Image 1: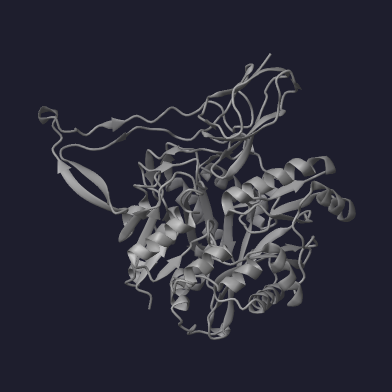
Image 2 (image 1 turned 180 degrees about the horizontal axis):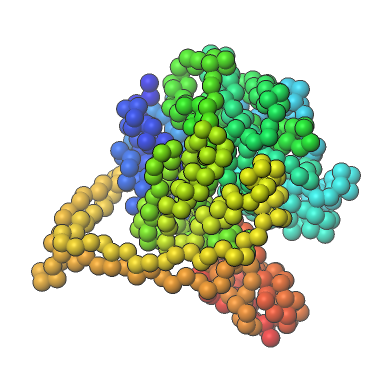
Length: 584
């Protein structure tokens, strides 16, 4: 059994891994950036070490810093979570070459399946048909145009070394190819540390259905069941469920067998997910995620298995103690992702900030996997997933109604969240009937009437105040708790109330302020300026591209005119309300 596991990640997934490790008696080691010094995963871990830096590249994607913490902490295993280094072959090899266990597949399997192009080739060799596409890295937008002209528009540009919709752009016509490829490469580099992309056909009305697999080092590979992840925006999932609705049993069995074939073809070990697109009774291999998925809890609730526990047990060399015929799926589970985004108008604009209030749901069949508590800050530098709300019911309709009840009990103030959009999705007839597709959220749903997110003050308390003082000793985080009287007479700090910042009056971050001054609606980093001084622009035209929370957002002119002044350049950091362009 593993003794000490370092979690090379942050947020909700780091908290999730820490909890299972604690139940198994395994010591946990957290790592953190400067911004995450007091994050929840840091507070929960047995030990925590500073990586330095603010951005992901400076911290959670800093291999040398993580390797140094492994050495100093004496960790005998590393769990990569998802995102960051979870599908990075070089990182996995750097871990295993030091005699440390990597809680995931062998580097060779990541090399085959972590690269989406080689995974397509491996699936073909295993006899599993994939979505039509080019098995080569894109070097020029002309390759995208040639593919679109041959197979028809639209087409999809996708990150070769990533997933989760990051680094994916849909190209509807040839003139969009240059900017789409450039944007996809930037997002892929920012989120996965590699910019390579490829192109494939974009299906017209597909469902996104994936198979969870478990494979041990003793030759056993099993499929646990499918998840329907079709409720998406910007090709990123909002709601997932298991089992998939309106999904024939013979297709389920065939897809499960295909997932096992794909996994076995690359010598896969540990937990993984084989993703498919399903349309008109046919399914196509999409990619394999060589890691734990964000939506793994819905599989856990319908199978009764702890996937993180099995990840750790398999990594320690244990054999699966059940067979395919032993897997029983009971009831129905639904998960909604609670992201710090303002869904008003369907824009789903990033909403970084401090959570001033977080009332969590409870009751029968309700589970919340959160990475933050009230008082924690959602930074523009990282992914915006706050928490995952998961429910189980004896059937799909009971699970759907239970989810609506749980959402009603959930109150988050200080940042906007996707919860109001989740209610719209869950109540729509297409979702109720299980006839929605991956494009449905963005093409069919109306979010114009969503309420503004609540904001409120939060009180620290009365009487004695618990004061935590944090120090670093040789880079290791040490926290000492002190209880201080709430009295201003002796010069000590008294308890206080923190007023929440008023909510921005504009919504999504894709339009200007309504005046000649184009302002940004959120904190972020300018990645591109699309206009020049003296240029004529039309209302709705993109003037800058802003990166916030690992997503690129277009900031558009709200009025037509001529660009008079440009106040920013690529690489500049901006705050909500900053004027970036003046139009006259």
